[in-house]
Amino acid sequence: MAGSEQRAAGPTGCEEAFRRPRSVPDLTPRHGISEVSAISGLTAHTLRWYERIGLLEPVDRSHAGQRRYTDADLARLAFLTKLRLTGMPVADMVRYVELVRAGDGTRDERRELLVAHRAEVRRRMADLGATLAVIDMKIDHYGESGLPLCGDEETPNHCGQDRKSA
Image 1 (spheres, helix red, strand yellow):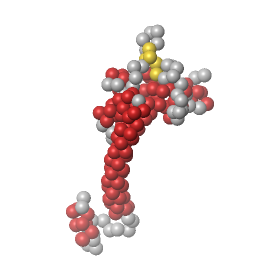
Image 2: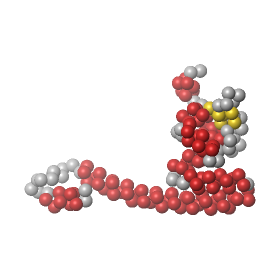
Image 3: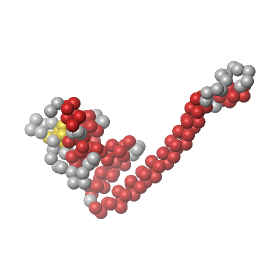
Image 4: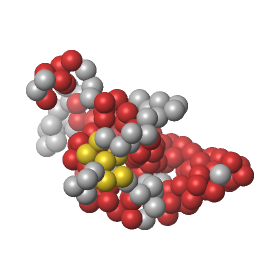
């Protein structure tokens, strides 16, 4: 089946494993780095770097030495990608993965790290919401039909205000 026909039929196994990770992922190494890069949006360089700094376990290799990722690797990448998208520093991501590796005794620490990150994300979302409201107000200002253009005799105050507030 050709690539475009496969997409029309449904998501690939790699895409499925990345977009909808299973609670018990398949540990069979079968996804190549280019496929994982295309699905995750991470470059091959970033994938190799994630492995080097310990965000991913050492990835299995084919007989030709090519990296082969498991569904478990993709599930972790999906989570790490979301953490990065929300602005978590790589150092905190590494700390989180180290805690996971240390076992169940670190569940409280992992939770605390995620709770603190969630609070930061919520703060930034509130800031972005307030910023978006200002942008919306300015868009509404420029989008009002029927307002005379600057320079018209009828709108000297409106134009002065516009220049002051950019």
